[in-house]
Amino acid sequence: MAKLKGIIKLEGTLDNLTFYKAKEGYLVKTKGGVSKERIQNDPAFERTRENGSEFGSSASSGKLLRTTVRNLMIRAKDNRVSSRVTQKMTQIKNFDTTSVRGERNVAVGLSTPEGQATLKGFDFNNRAILSAVLFAPFTLAPATGEVTIPNMVPLNDIAYPGGATHVSLSSAFMNIDFATTDNAIEYSPTVNIPIDSTSATQTLTPAGVPAGTGNDIYVLLIEFFQEINGIQYPLKNGAFNVLNIIDVA
Image 1: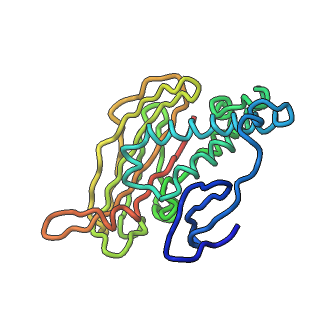
Image 2: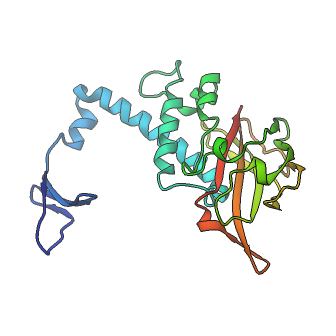
Image 3: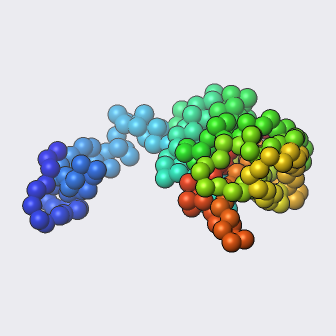
Protein backbone atom coordinates (compact mmCIF):
# COMPACT_ATOMS: atom_id res chain seq x y z
CA MET A 1 0.00 0.00 0.00
CA ALA A 2 1.32 3.45 -0.91
CA LYS A 3 0.08 6.98 -0.31
CA LEU A 4 -0.83 9.03 -3.35
CA LYS A 5 0.68 12.52 -3.52
CA GLY A 6 -0.11 15.30 -5.94
CA ILE A 7 -3.03 17.47 -6.90
CA ILE A 8 -4.88 14.74 -8.86
CA LYS A 9 -6.98 12.54 -6.59
CA LEU A 10 -7.92 9.18 -8.08
CA GLU A 11 -10.44 6.54 -7.04
CA GLY A 12 -10.99 3.28 -8.90
CA THR A 13 -8.92 0.66 -10.70
CA LEU A 14 -6.35 1.22 -13.44
CA ASP A 15 -4.50 -1.81 -14.84
CA ASN A 16 -3.33 -3.66 -11.72
CA LEU A 17 -3.57 -0.64 -9.40
CA THR A 18 -6.49 0.25 -7.16
CA PHE A 19 -6.86 3.85 -5.96
CA TYR A 20 -9.09 4.57 -2.96
CA LYS A 21 -9.75 7.12 -0.25
CA ALA A 22 -9.20 6.25 3.42
CA LYS A 23 -8.91 8.28 6.59
CA GLU A 24 -5.15 8.46 5.97
CA GLY A 25 -5.74 10.12 2.60
CA TYR A 26 -5.73 8.82 -0.97
CA LEU A 27 -4.01 5.42 -1.16
CA VAL A 28 -3.01 3.00 -3.90
CA LYS A 29 -2.45 -0.76 -3.83
CA THR A 30 -1.87 -3.49 -6.36
CA LYS A 31 -4.68 -5.84 -7.31
CA GLY A 32 -4.26 -9.34 -6.03
CA GLY A 33 -5.90 -12.16 -4.15
CA VAL A 34 -7.93 -15.12 -5.27
CA SER A 35 -10.41 -14.79 -8.12
CA LYS A 36 -14.13 -14.85 -7.43
CA GLU A 37 -14.56 -17.85 -9.71
CA ARG A 38 -12.01 -19.88 -7.79
CA ILE A 39 -13.61 -19.04 -4.43
CA GLN A 40 -16.99 -20.15 -5.77
CA ASN A 41 -15.79 -23.46 -7.20
CA ASP A 42 -12.48 -24.62 -5.71
CA PRO A 43 -12.96 -27.31 -3.01
CA ALA A 44 -10.09 -25.70 -1.12
CA PHE A 45 -12.33 -22.71 -0.42
CA GLU A 46 -15.30 -24.65 0.92
CA ARG A 47 -14.87 -23.14 4.40
CA THR A 48 -14.70 -19.68 2.85
CA ARG A 49 -17.97 -20.27 1.02
CA GLU A 50 -19.62 -21.52 4.20
CA ASN A 51 -18.46 -18.49 6.17
CA GLY A 52 -19.63 -16.17 3.41
CA SER A 53 -23.05 -17.80 3.28
CA GLU A 54 -23.54 -17.48 7.03
CA PHE A 55 -22.34 -13.89 7.07
CA GLY A 56 -24.76 -13.00 4.28
CA SER A 57 -27.61 -14.61 6.17
CA SER A 58 -26.70 -12.73 9.36
CA ALA A 59 -26.49 -9.43 7.45
CA SER A 60 -29.95 -10.03 5.98
CA SER A 61 -31.36 -10.74 9.44
CA GLY A 62 -29.82 -7.52 10.70
CA LYS A 63 -31.39 -5.58 7.87
CA LEU A 64 -34.77 -7.14 8.68
CA LEU A 65 -34.53 -5.97 12.28
CA ARG A 66 -33.48 -2.47 11.23
CA THR A 67 -36.27 -2.26 8.66
CA THR A 68 -38.91 -3.33 11.17
CA VAL A 69 -37.84 -0.75 13.76
CA ARG A 70 -36.91 1.92 11.20
CA ASN A 71 -39.55 4.48 12.23
CA LEU A 72 -37.99 4.61 15.70
CA MET A 73 -34.38 4.02 14.69
CA ILE A 74 -34.25 7.13 12.50
CA ARG A 75 -34.68 9.10 15.75
CA ALA A 76 -32.02 7.23 17.74
CA LYS A 77 -29.04 5.69 16.00
CA ASP A 78 -25.30 6.07 15.49
CA ASN A 79 -23.38 5.95 12.22
CA ARG A 80 -22.23 2.36 12.79
CA VAL A 81 -25.57 0.86 13.74
CA SER A 82 -25.80 -1.30 10.60
CA SER A 83 -22.46 -3.00 11.18
CA ARG A 84 -23.13 -3.36 14.92
CA VAL A 85 -26.48 -5.04 14.27
CA THR A 86 -24.83 -7.43 11.78
CA GLN A 87 -22.14 -8.23 14.33
CA LYS A 88 -24.82 -8.99 16.93
CA MET A 89 -26.68 -11.24 14.48
CA THR A 90 -23.46 -13.10 13.70
CA GLN A 91 -23.03 -13.80 17.42
CA ILE A 92 -26.63 -15.04 17.66
CA LYS A 93 -26.15 -17.30 14.62
CA ASN A 94 -23.40 -19.11 16.52
CA PHE A 95 -26.01 -20.43 19.00
CA ASP A 96 -27.53 -22.50 16.19
CA THR A 97 -26.12 -25.89 17.14
CA THR A 98 -28.39 -27.97 14.89
CA SER A 99 -27.80 -26.67 11.35
CA VAL A 100 -24.81 -27.82 9.31
CA ARG A 101 -21.91 -25.45 8.84
CA GLY A 102 -22.71 -22.88 6.19
CA GLU A 103 -26.42 -22.98 7.05
CA ARG A 104 -26.41 -21.80 10.66
CA ASN A 105 -28.83 -18.91 10.98
CA VAL A 106 -30.28 -16.28 13.27
CA ALA A 107 -33.79 -17.79 13.38
CA VAL A 108 -32.51 -20.95 15.06
CA GLY A 109 -30.04 -19.01 17.21
CA LEU A 110 -32.84 -16.82 18.56
CA SER A 111 -34.84 -19.88 19.58
CA THR A 112 -32.27 -20.44 22.33
CA PRO A 113 -32.12 -18.58 25.67
CA GLU A 114 -28.51 -17.66 24.91
CA GLY A 115 -29.42 -16.12 21.56
CA GLN A 116 -32.25 -14.10 23.07
CA ALA A 117 -30.00 -12.89 25.89
CA THR A 118 -27.44 -11.74 23.31
CA LEU A 119 -29.96 -9.48 21.55
CA LYS A 120 -31.57 -8.19 24.74
CA GLY A 121 -30.13 -4.86 25.84
CA PHE A 122 -28.89 -3.80 22.41
CA ASP A 123 -28.66 -0.01 22.02
CA PHE A 124 -29.20 1.35 18.52
CA ASN A 125 -27.39 4.56 19.50
CA ASN A 126 -24.07 3.77 21.18
CA ARG A 127 -23.76 7.42 22.22
CA ALA A 128 -26.83 7.04 24.44
CA ILE A 129 -27.03 3.84 26.48
CA LEU A 130 -30.29 3.10 28.29
CA SER A 131 -28.59 2.07 31.54
CA ALA A 132 -26.72 5.40 31.60
CA VAL A 133 -29.80 7.52 30.85
CA LEU A 134 -32.78 5.98 32.67
CA PHE A 135 -32.21 5.17 36.35
CA ALA A 136 -35.82 4.48 37.33
CA PRO A 137 -36.83 0.78 37.40
CA PHE A 138 -39.47 -0.32 34.92
CA THR A 139 -41.56 -3.40 34.27
CA LEU A 140 -42.68 -5.10 31.06
CA ALA A 141 -45.88 -7.08 30.55
CA PRO A 142 -44.82 -9.51 27.79
CA ALA A 143 -48.37 -10.42 26.74
CA THR A 144 -49.25 -6.82 25.84
CA GLY A 145 -45.87 -5.13 25.56
CA GLU A 146 -46.91 -2.57 28.17
CA VAL A 147 -43.99 -0.78 29.85
CA THR A 148 -44.56 0.80 33.26
CA ILE A 149 -42.16 3.23 34.98
CA PRO A 150 -43.59 3.82 38.47
CA ASN A 151 -43.17 7.12 40.29
CA MET A 152 -40.67 8.54 37.83
CA VAL A 153 -39.14 11.93 38.65
CA PRO A 154 -37.52 13.18 35.43
CA LEU A 155 -35.12 15.53 37.20
CA ASN A 156 -33.75 12.66 39.31
CA ASP A 157 -34.37 9.54 37.25
CA ILE A 158 -33.13 10.66 33.83
CA ALA A 159 -29.62 11.74 32.86
CA TYR A 160 -30.65 14.49 30.47
CA PRO A 161 -28.24 16.43 28.23
CA GLY A 162 -27.63 20.13 28.71
CA GLY A 163 -30.26 22.28 27.06
CA ALA A 164 -33.02 19.67 27.28
CA THR A 165 -36.30 20.89 28.74
CA HIS A 166 -38.59 17.98 27.86
CA VAL A 167 -38.35 14.23 27.42
CA SER A 168 -40.56 11.88 25.42
CA LEU A 169 -41.07 8.19 26.17
CA SER A 170 -42.53 5.57 23.84
CA SER A 171 -42.29 1.85 23.26
CA ALA A 172 -42.93 -0.71 20.57
CA PHE A 173 -43.82 -4.40 20.43
CA MET A 174 -42.44 -6.29 17.42
CA ASN A 175 -42.83 -9.82 16.13
CA ILE A 176 -40.16 -10.88 13.64
CA ASP A 177 -39.81 -14.29 12.01
CA PHE A 178 -36.20 -14.37 10.86
CA ALA A 179 -36.81 -17.57 8.91
CA THR A 180 -39.69 -16.28 6.76
CA THR A 181 -38.93 -12.51 7.11
CA ASP A 182 -42.53 -11.90 8.20
CA ASN A 183 -42.66 -8.94 10.59
CA ALA A 184 -45.10 -6.67 12.37
CA ILE A 185 -44.84 -3.84 14.90
CA GLU A 186 -47.22 -2.00 17.21
CA TYR A 187 -46.39 1.37 18.78
CA SER A 188 -47.43 2.97 22.04
CA PRO A 189 -48.60 6.57 22.23
CA THR A 190 -45.79 9.01 23.06
CA VAL A 191 -45.65 10.51 26.55
CA ASN A 192 -44.04 13.97 26.53
CA ILE A 193 -43.24 15.57 29.90
CA PRO A 194 -41.14 18.45 31.21
CA ILE A 195 -37.87 17.62 32.92
CA ASP A 196 -38.82 18.70 36.43
CA SER A 197 -39.36 17.26 39.91
CA THR A 198 -42.91 16.02 39.31
CA SER A 199 -43.39 12.38 40.30
CA ALA A 200 -45.75 10.32 38.14
CA THR A 201 -46.13 6.77 36.91
CA GLN A 202 -45.64 6.54 33.16
CA THR A 203 -47.37 3.75 31.26
CA LEU A 204 -46.57 2.95 27.63
CA THR A 205 -49.07 0.57 26.04
CA PRO A 206 -48.70 -0.52 22.40
CA ALA A 207 -51.83 -0.20 20.29
CA GLY A 208 -52.08 -3.97 19.95
CA VAL A 209 -50.24 -7.27 19.82
CA PRO A 210 -48.34 -7.77 16.54
CA ALA A 211 -49.35 -10.80 14.54
CA GLY A 212 -46.83 -13.51 13.86
CA THR A 213 -45.17 -16.65 15.17
CA GLY A 214 -41.61 -15.32 15.27
CA ASN A 215 -39.68 -13.73 18.11
CA ASP A 216 -41.31 -11.08 20.28
CA ILE A 217 -38.99 -8.08 20.59
CA TYR A 218 -39.71 -5.08 22.82
CA VAL A 219 -38.03 -1.68 22.51
CA LEU A 220 -38.04 1.55 24.51
CA LEU A 221 -37.38 4.98 22.97
CA ILE A 222 -36.32 8.07 24.96
CA GLU A 223 -36.10 11.41 23.12
CA PHE A 224 -34.95 14.83 24.32
CA PHE A 225 -36.31 18.22 23.27
CA GLN A 226 -35.66 21.88 23.93
CA GLU A 227 -38.67 24.16 24.19
CA ILE A 228 -38.33 27.67 22.81
CA ASN A 229 -41.32 30.02 22.72
CA GLY A 230 -43.74 27.16 23.19
CA ILE A 231 -42.31 24.96 20.43
CA GLN A 232 -40.27 21.82 21.14
CA TYR A 233 -37.26 21.11 18.95
CA PRO A 234 -35.35 17.79 18.84
CA LEU A 235 -32.14 18.34 20.81
CA LYS A 236 -29.03 18.15 18.59
CA ASN A 237 -30.93 16.13 15.98
CA GLY A 238 -31.42 13.22 18.33
CA ALA A 239 -27.75 12.71 19.22
CA PHE A 240 -28.69 11.89 22.83
CA ASN A 241 -31.80 9.80 22.11
CA VAL A 242 -32.01 6.22 23.35
CA LEU A 243 -33.47 3.20 21.56
CA ASN A 244 -32.96 -0.05 23.43
CA ILE A 245 -34.17 -3.64 23.07
CA ILE A 246 -35.48 -4.22 26.56
CA ASP A 247 -36.50 -7.85 26.06
CA VAL A 248 -36.65 -10.72 23.56
CA ALA A 249 -38.80 -13.85 23.70
